[in-house]
Image (cartoon, rainbow, N blue to C red; front, side, top):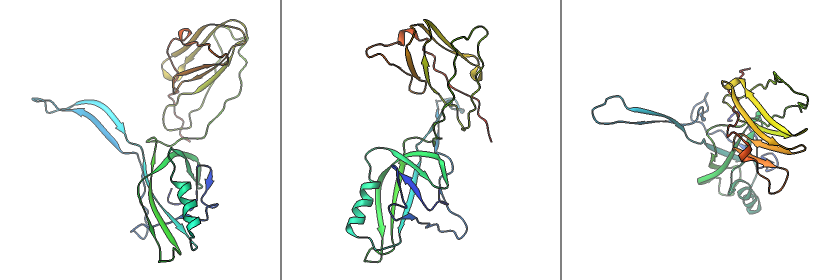
Length: 240
């Protein structure tokens, strides 16, 4: 992040705002930035037991201190334009030019400061951005369209490569050819099975496995009762 002079927030580049990242590190050779999200261990201690009961871990959303340099004299109009850009009331997409495929969703929080020479020449604005997640997002990858209308036993094998560092849950789109069922066995996750039954010819269905949502193209029609309540999660991660 620190190595990038420019970034894009809410679809607007810092180049268009005529500003860039400033580097205010105390070290001559090193810049300090967030490496991993803050992690807390969830456990409980009880009387008479030295070893606590372990329940798992919990990650906190990222908090990113950012310093912005303006290499010109800022007018009141420039200040107001910058404030409207940065001070959003909801998480907006943020990425840095040196790594545009690593996207986060962030929002300004806390206090902010401006350093200037009395006439707002060569000013530096310091503020903090908080993300909505402990992790960054990759771009959306779309697979090819598969025609499985003639699919039979033992089925068709489809391979998806997980380029991230964590398991992911896909968004799937189906269009029925003939009446029947949908059955997908996830071999990356111990044979996890996604199944929908009793579907009609021509139905178009969107299944968001992350948010566990099923959307039909027919208003007022719901297919939750036709689903086995299993949503796919792709486990295998490929390190390149």
